[in-house]
Image (tube, rainbow, N blue to C red; front, side, top):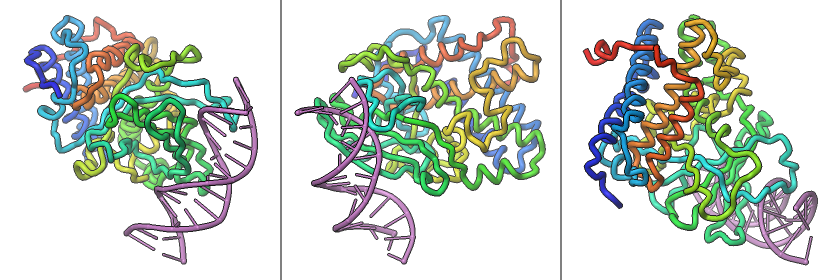
Length: 359
DNA sequence: CGCATTTGACCCCA
DNA sequence: TGGGGTCAAATGCG
Protein backbone atom coordinates (compact mmCIF):
# COMPACT_ATOMS: atom_id res chain seq x y z
CA UNK A 1 0.00 0.00 0.00
CA UNK A 2 2.70 2.40 0.07
CA UNK A 3 3.90 3.79 -3.01
CA UNK A 4 7.28 3.69 -4.24
CA UNK A 5 8.50 6.75 -2.63
CA UNK A 6 10.90 8.69 -4.52
CA UNK A 7 13.74 6.72 -3.38
CA UNK A 8 16.07 7.58 -6.17
CA UNK A 9 18.89 5.32 -5.24
CA UNK A 10 16.75 2.36 -4.72
CA UNK A 11 15.19 3.03 -7.97
CA UNK A 12 18.45 2.93 -9.74
CA UNK A 13 19.17 -0.36 -8.23
CA UNK A 14 15.82 -1.60 -9.21
CA UNK A 15 16.49 -0.50 -12.70
CA UNK A 16 19.72 -2.36 -12.71
CA UNK A 17 18.12 -5.40 -11.33
CA UNK A 18 15.42 -5.21 -13.88
CA UNK A 19 18.09 -5.12 -16.44
CA UNK A 20 19.63 -8.20 -15.02
CA UNK A 21 16.37 -9.92 -14.99
CA UNK A 22 15.97 -9.18 -18.61
CA UNK A 23 19.37 -10.55 -19.36
CA UNK A 24 18.69 -13.68 -17.47
CA UNK A 25 15.61 -14.08 -19.44
CA UNK A 26 17.49 -13.75 -22.65
CA UNK A 27 20.06 -16.14 -21.44
CA UNK A 28 17.49 -18.68 -20.69
CA UNK A 29 16.03 -18.24 -24.10
CA UNK A 30 19.33 -18.90 -25.69
CA UNK A 31 19.99 -21.84 -23.53
CA UNK A 32 16.77 -23.35 -24.48
CA UNK A 33 17.57 -23.63 -28.06
CA UNK A 34 19.95 -22.52 -30.67
CA UNK A 35 21.83 -19.97 -28.75
CA UNK A 36 25.51 -20.30 -29.20
CA UNK A 37 27.68 -20.95 -26.21
CA UNK A 38 29.49 -17.75 -26.85
CA UNK A 39 26.37 -15.76 -26.77
CA UNK A 40 25.40 -17.37 -23.55
CA UNK A 41 28.71 -16.57 -22.09
CA UNK A 42 28.44 -13.07 -23.20
CA UNK A 43 25.10 -12.69 -21.56
CA UNK A 44 26.39 -14.28 -18.47
CA UNK A 45 29.18 -11.87 -18.21
CA UNK A 46 26.88 -9.02 -18.78
CA UNK A 47 24.76 -10.19 -15.97
CA UNK A 48 27.78 -10.43 -13.85
CA UNK A 49 28.77 -6.94 -14.70
CA UNK A 50 25.49 -5.38 -13.92
CA UNK A 51 25.33 -7.36 -10.80
CA UNK A 52 28.60 -6.00 -9.65
CA UNK A 53 27.47 -2.59 -10.43
CA UNK A 54 24.30 -2.98 -8.48
CA UNK A 55 26.17 -4.27 -5.56
CA UNK A 56 28.42 -1.36 -5.72
CA UNK A 57 25.50 0.98 -5.70
CA UNK A 58 23.98 -0.68 -2.77
CA UNK A 59 27.14 -0.72 -0.84
CA UNK A 60 28.00 2.79 -1.58
CA UNK A 61 24.73 3.77 -0.14
CA UNK A 62 22.97 4.64 -3.31
CA UNK A 63 20.47 2.25 -2.28
CA UNK A 64 19.81 3.52 1.04
CA UNK A 65 17.43 3.30 3.62
CA UNK A 66 13.78 2.88 3.53
CA UNK A 67 14.74 -0.43 4.81
CA UNK A 68 11.26 -1.23 5.30
CA UNK A 69 9.47 0.11 2.46
CA UNK A 70 7.10 -2.03 0.69
CA UNK A 71 8.42 -3.51 -2.40
CA UNK A 72 4.99 -4.06 -3.58
CA UNK A 73 4.54 -0.81 -5.22
CA UNK A 74 7.91 -1.10 -6.73
CA UNK A 75 7.07 -4.29 -8.35
CA UNK A 76 3.82 -3.13 -9.55
CA UNK A 77 5.32 -0.29 -11.32
CA UNK A 78 8.64 -1.35 -12.46
CA UNK A 79 9.19 -4.80 -13.56
CA UNK A 80 6.98 -6.33 -15.98
CA UNK A 81 3.95 -6.69 -13.99
CA UNK A 82 3.11 -9.30 -16.47
CA UNK A 83 5.30 -11.64 -14.63
CA UNK A 84 3.67 -11.89 -11.40
CA UNK A 85 6.20 -12.53 -8.92
CA UNK A 86 5.31 -13.70 -5.71
CA UNK A 87 7.88 -13.01 -3.36
CA UNK A 88 9.25 -15.01 -0.75
CA UNK A 89 11.87 -14.50 1.69
CA UNK A 90 13.45 -16.72 4.01
CA UNK A 91 13.81 -16.41 7.58
CA UNK A 92 13.43 -18.26 10.65
CA UNK A 93 10.16 -19.21 11.45
CA UNK A 94 8.26 -19.61 14.48
CA UNK A 95 9.28 -23.12 14.28
CA UNK A 96 8.47 -25.19 17.15
CA UNK A 97 10.99 -27.86 16.81
CA UNK A 98 8.52 -29.99 15.18
CA UNK A 99 9.90 -33.40 15.05
CA UNK A 100 6.87 -35.39 14.88
CA UNK A 101 6.12 -38.54 13.33
CA UNK A 102 8.73 -39.02 10.78
CA UNK A 103 11.79 -38.27 12.66
CA UNK A 104 12.62 -35.26 10.72
CA UNK A 105 16.10 -36.38 11.33
CA UNK A 106 18.24 -35.46 8.48
CA UNK A 107 15.62 -33.89 6.46
CA UNK A 108 16.65 -30.56 5.30
CA UNK A 109 14.16 -27.94 5.83
CA UNK A 110 14.08 -24.34 4.99
CA UNK A 111 11.44 -21.80 5.14
CA UNK A 112 10.53 -19.00 2.89
CA UNK A 113 7.85 -16.45 2.99
CA UNK A 114 5.81 -16.00 -0.07
CA UNK A 115 3.53 -13.21 -0.71
CA UNK A 116 0.68 -13.75 -2.99
CA UNK A 117 -0.37 -10.67 -4.78
CA UNK A 118 -3.01 -12.78 -6.26
CA UNK A 119 -5.10 -12.33 -3.28
CA UNK A 120 -6.07 -14.21 -0.27
CA UNK A 121 -7.59 -16.93 -2.25
CA UNK A 122 -4.57 -17.76 -4.23
CA UNK A 123 -2.19 -19.96 -2.56
CA UNK A 124 1.13 -18.96 -3.90
CA UNK A 125 4.17 -20.81 -4.53
CA UNK A 126 4.62 -22.38 -7.78
CA UNK A 127 8.12 -23.32 -7.22
CA UNK A 128 8.50 -25.44 -10.26
CA UNK A 129 7.55 -28.65 -8.64
CA UNK A 130 4.34 -30.47 -8.69
CA UNK A 131 2.84 -30.76 -5.28
CA UNK A 132 -0.01 -32.76 -4.10
CA UNK A 133 -1.89 -31.74 -1.03
CA UNK A 134 -2.29 -34.51 1.43
CA UNK A 135 -3.56 -32.76 4.45
CA UNK A 136 -4.61 -29.63 6.15
CA UNK A 137 -4.74 -28.83 9.78
CA UNK A 138 -5.71 -26.09 12.09
CA UNK A 139 -2.71 -25.00 14.00
CA UNK A 140 -2.96 -23.84 17.48
CA UNK A 141 -2.36 -20.17 17.72
CA UNK A 142 -2.59 -19.64 14.04
CA UNK A 143 -5.53 -18.03 12.41
CA UNK A 144 -5.21 -20.05 9.29
CA UNK A 145 -4.85 -23.74 8.72
CA UNK A 146 -1.64 -25.22 7.50
CA UNK A 147 -1.60 -27.15 4.30
CA UNK A 148 0.58 -30.17 3.80
CA UNK A 149 1.93 -30.98 0.42
CA UNK A 150 4.16 -33.65 -0.93
CA UNK A 151 5.81 -34.13 -4.25
CA UNK A 152 3.51 -35.55 -6.85
CA UNK A 153 6.23 -37.93 -7.84
CA UNK A 154 6.44 -39.43 -4.47
CA UNK A 155 5.04 -42.71 -5.59
CA UNK A 156 6.43 -42.86 -9.02
CA UNK A 157 9.89 -41.75 -8.14
CA UNK A 158 10.05 -41.93 -4.47
CA UNK A 159 10.61 -38.25 -4.12
CA UNK A 160 10.13 -37.49 -0.48
CA UNK A 161 10.07 -33.73 -0.65
CA UNK A 162 7.25 -32.13 1.24
CA UNK A 163 6.25 -28.66 2.13
CA UNK A 164 3.91 -26.93 4.46
CA UNK A 165 2.12 -23.80 3.50
CA UNK A 166 0.54 -21.54 6.00
CA UNK A 167 -0.96 -18.14 5.71
CA UNK A 168 0.49 -15.71 8.13
CA UNK A 169 -1.61 -14.15 10.75
CA UNK A 170 -0.70 -10.62 9.96
CA UNK A 171 -1.13 -10.69 6.27
CA UNK A 172 -3.39 -13.16 4.65
CA UNK A 173 -1.67 -12.66 1.37
CA UNK A 174 1.60 -13.77 2.75
CA UNK A 175 2.40 -17.40 3.16
CA UNK A 176 5.04 -19.13 5.10
CA UNK A 177 6.31 -22.09 3.21
CA UNK A 178 8.39 -24.69 4.87
CA UNK A 179 10.15 -27.21 2.74
CA UNK A 180 11.19 -30.55 4.06
CA UNK A 181 13.53 -32.86 2.32
CA UNK A 182 14.84 -32.61 -1.15
CA UNK A 183 13.42 -33.42 -4.48
CA UNK A 184 14.87 -36.53 -5.92
CA UNK A 185 12.43 -36.69 -8.71
CA UNK A 186 13.58 -36.14 -12.21
CA UNK A 187 11.47 -34.45 -14.74
CA UNK A 188 11.31 -35.27 -18.36
CA UNK A 189 12.97 -32.25 -19.77
CA UNK A 190 15.59 -32.32 -17.18
CA UNK A 191 16.27 -35.93 -17.58
CA UNK A 192 16.39 -35.54 -21.28
CA UNK A 193 18.73 -32.69 -21.05
CA UNK A 194 20.99 -34.59 -18.79
CA UNK A 195 21.08 -37.52 -21.04
CA UNK A 196 21.34 -35.81 -24.34
CA UNK A 197 24.65 -35.46 -25.96
CA UNK A 198 24.52 -31.76 -25.91
CA UNK A 199 27.53 -29.76 -26.56
CA UNK A 200 29.56 -29.24 -23.51
CA UNK A 201 29.11 -25.58 -23.71
CA UNK A 202 25.41 -25.77 -23.85
CA UNK A 203 25.27 -28.34 -21.21
CA UNK A 204 27.34 -26.22 -18.98
CA UNK A 205 25.22 -23.23 -19.64
CA UNK A 206 22.16 -25.20 -19.00
CA UNK A 207 23.50 -26.42 -15.77
CA UNK A 208 24.34 -22.94 -14.85
CA UNK A 209 20.84 -21.96 -15.39
CA UNK A 210 19.72 -24.79 -13.30
CA UNK A 211 21.96 -23.71 -10.61
CA UNK A 212 20.72 -20.31 -10.99
CA UNK A 213 17.56 -21.57 -9.58
CA UNK A 214 19.02 -24.05 -7.27
CA UNK A 215 21.13 -21.38 -5.87
CA UNK A 216 18.08 -19.83 -4.47
CA UNK A 217 17.18 -22.92 -2.74
CA UNK A 218 20.54 -23.45 -1.37
CA UNK A 219 20.66 -20.03 -0.01
CA UNK A 220 17.44 -20.43 1.64
CA UNK A 221 18.67 -23.46 3.31
CA UNK A 222 21.79 -21.83 4.35
CA UNK A 223 19.92 -19.03 5.88
CA UNK A 224 17.69 -21.20 7.70
CA UNK A 225 19.01 -20.83 11.09
CA UNK A 226 19.87 -23.99 12.80
CA UNK A 227 18.40 -24.68 16.09
CA UNK A 228 17.88 -21.42 17.77
CA UNK A 229 14.88 -20.37 15.93
CA UNK A 230 12.97 -17.82 17.67
CA UNK A 231 9.43 -18.12 18.18
CA UNK A 232 6.88 -15.49 18.10
CA UNK A 233 5.63 -13.24 15.47
CA UNK A 234 8.77 -11.22 15.46
CA UNK A 235 10.73 -13.98 13.95
CA UNK A 236 10.39 -12.84 10.44
CA UNK A 237 10.95 -9.26 11.06
CA UNK A 238 13.91 -9.97 13.12
CA UNK A 239 15.76 -11.54 10.32
CA UNK A 240 14.27 -11.58 6.94
CA UNK A 241 17.03 -13.14 5.03
CA UNK A 242 15.90 -13.86 1.62
CA UNK A 243 13.30 -13.08 -0.89
CA UNK A 244 12.49 -14.36 -4.24
CA UNK A 245 9.62 -13.94 -6.42
CA UNK A 246 7.39 -16.49 -7.70
CA UNK A 247 4.40 -16.28 -9.83
CA UNK A 248 1.00 -16.02 -8.61
CA UNK A 249 -1.24 -18.30 -10.37
CA UNK A 250 -4.07 -16.53 -11.92
CA UNK A 251 -2.47 -13.20 -12.30
CA UNK A 252 -0.71 -13.90 -15.45
CA UNK A 253 0.11 -16.70 -17.71
CA UNK A 254 3.08 -18.69 -16.72
CA UNK A 255 6.08 -16.94 -17.94
CA UNK A 256 8.40 -19.42 -19.39
CA UNK A 257 11.13 -16.97 -19.48
CA UNK A 258 11.17 -16.49 -15.88
CA UNK A 259 12.66 -19.41 -14.13
CA UNK A 260 11.11 -18.30 -10.96
CA UNK A 261 7.67 -18.18 -12.19
CA UNK A 262 7.79 -21.62 -13.41
CA UNK A 263 4.41 -23.09 -13.19
CA UNK A 264 3.97 -26.42 -11.67
CA UNK A 265 5.13 -28.00 -14.78
CA UNK A 266 7.68 -30.60 -14.30
CA UNK A 267 9.30 -29.79 -17.55
CA UNK A 268 10.62 -26.81 -15.94
CA UNK A 269 14.25 -26.73 -15.41
CA UNK A 270 13.65 -25.09 -12.21
CA UNK A 271 12.36 -28.31 -11.02
CA UNK A 272 15.65 -29.98 -11.10
CA UNK A 273 17.30 -26.99 -9.72
CA UNK A 274 15.09 -26.63 -6.81
CA UNK A 275 15.66 -30.12 -5.90
CA UNK A 276 19.06 -29.06 -4.85
CA UNK A 277 22.39 -30.56 -5.29
CA UNK A 278 21.09 -34.00 -4.88
CA UNK A 279 19.27 -33.72 -8.08
CA UNK A 280 20.33 -36.46 -10.36
CA UNK A 281 19.63 -34.26 -13.26
CA UNK A 282 22.50 -32.02 -12.60
CA UNK A 283 25.81 -33.47 -13.20
CA UNK A 284 28.04 -33.91 -10.28
CA UNK A 285 30.19 -31.00 -11.00
CA UNK A 286 27.42 -28.57 -11.10
CA UNK A 287 25.35 -30.12 -8.49
CA UNK A 288 28.02 -29.70 -5.98
CA UNK A 289 28.96 -26.28 -7.05
CA UNK A 290 26.38 -24.06 -5.54
CA UNK A 291 27.83 -23.20 -2.28
CA UNK A 292 31.18 -24.64 -2.35
CA UNK A 293 32.62 -21.34 -3.08
CA UNK A 294 35.04 -23.27 -5.06
CA UNK A 295 35.52 -20.00 -6.59
CA UNK A 296 37.78 -18.51 -4.09
CA UNK A 297 40.92 -20.27 -4.96
CA UNK A 298 40.07 -22.04 -8.11
CA UNK A 299 41.14 -21.18 -11.56
CA UNK A 300 39.54 -18.52 -13.60
CA UNK A 301 37.15 -20.70 -15.39
CA UNK A 302 36.03 -22.38 -12.29
CA UNK A 303 35.76 -19.16 -10.50
CA UNK A 304 33.74 -17.59 -13.16
CA UNK A 305 31.34 -20.37 -13.47
CA UNK A 306 30.76 -20.79 -9.84
CA UNK A 307 30.64 -17.14 -9.12
CA UNK A 308 28.42 -16.49 -11.95
CA UNK A 309 25.94 -18.96 -10.86
CA UNK A 310 25.79 -17.57 -7.46
CA UNK A 311 25.74 -14.04 -8.48
CA UNK A 312 23.12 -14.55 -11.01
CA UNK A 313 20.94 -16.45 -8.72
CA UNK A 314 21.26 -13.96 -5.99
CA UNK A 315 20.72 -11.24 -8.41
CA UNK A 316 17.71 -12.66 -9.93
CA UNK A 317 16.32 -13.17 -6.55
CA UNK A 318 16.99 -9.64 -5.64
CA UNK A 319 15.60 -8.50 -8.87
CA UNK A 320 12.33 -10.17 -8.72
CA UNK A 321 12.17 -9.38 -5.18
CA UNK A 322 12.88 -5.79 -5.24
CA UNK A 323 10.65 -5.35 -8.10
CA UNK A 324 7.85 -7.14 -6.57
CA UNK A 325 5.33 -5.62 -4.44
CA UNK A 326 5.90 -6.94 -1.11
CA UNK A 327 5.16 -6.12 2.37
CA UNK A 328 8.43 -7.56 3.30
CA UNK A 329 11.32 -5.31 3.89
CA UNK A 330 13.00 -4.99 0.58
CA UNK A 331 16.16 -3.73 2.02
CA UNK A 332 16.45 -6.68 4.20
CA UNK A 333 16.25 -8.89 1.26
CA UNK A 334 18.95 -7.05 -0.44
CA UNK A 335 21.00 -7.40 2.62
CA UNK A 336 20.50 -11.03 2.50
CA UNK A 337 21.53 -11.17 -1.06
CA UNK A 338 24.53 -9.19 -0.33
CA UNK A 339 25.54 -11.36 2.45
CA UNK A 340 25.09 -14.25 0.16
CA UNK A 341 27.27 -12.59 -2.33
CA UNK A 342 29.76 -11.86 0.29
CA UNK A 343 29.93 -15.48 0.78
CA UNK A 344 32.00 -15.82 -2.25
CA UNK A 345 34.01 -12.87 -1.51
CA UNK A 346 33.87 -10.72 -4.45
CA UNK A 347 37.25 -9.85 -5.50
CA UNK A 348 37.46 -6.12 -5.36
CA UNK A 349 40.09 -6.30 -7.95
CA UNK A 350 37.86 -7.95 -10.39
CA UNK A 351 36.77 -5.29 -12.73
CA UNK A 352 34.41 -5.43 -15.50
CA UNK A 353 33.89 -3.16 -18.33
CA UNK A 354 30.40 -2.10 -17.83
CA UNK A 355 30.45 0.26 -20.67
CA UNK A 356 30.55 -2.50 -23.16
CA UNK A 357 27.51 -3.65 -21.50
CA UNK A 358 25.51 -0.64 -22.21
CA UNK A 359 26.91 -0.12 -25.60
C1' DC B 1 -11.16 -43.17 -15.52
C1' DG B 2 -7.34 -41.18 -13.37
C1' DC B 3 -5.66 -37.78 -10.53
C1' DA B 4 -6.03 -34.06 -7.07
C1' DT B 5 -8.27 -32.30 -3.05
C1' DT B 6 -10.84 -32.67 1.19
C1' DT B 7 -11.35 -34.18 5.67
C1' DG B 8 -11.66 -36.96 9.78
C1' DA B 9 -9.03 -40.43 12.07
C1' DC B 10 -4.85 -42.16 13.50
C1' DC B 11 -0.09 -42.01 15.07
C1' DC B 12 3.90 -40.14 17.34
C1' DC B 13 6.55 -37.14 20.16
C1' DA B 14 7.34 -33.64 23.69
C1' DT C 1 -2.30 -35.75 26.95
C1' DG C 2 -2.25 -32.32 23.46
C1' DG C 3 -0.51 -30.72 19.27
C1' DG C 4 1.21 -31.58 14.93
C1' DG C 5 2.05 -34.62 10.87
C1' DT C 6 0.34 -38.30 7.98
C1' DC C 7 -2.91 -41.63 6.25
C1' DA C 8 -6.59 -42.94 3.53
C1' DA C 9 -11.46 -43.01 2.20
C1' DA C 10 -14.66 -40.02 0.03
C1' DT C 11 -15.46 -36.67 -3.26
C1' DG C 12 -14.73 -33.58 -7.10
C1' DC C 13 -12.87 -32.37 -11.49
C1' DG C 14 -11.02 -32.69 -16.22
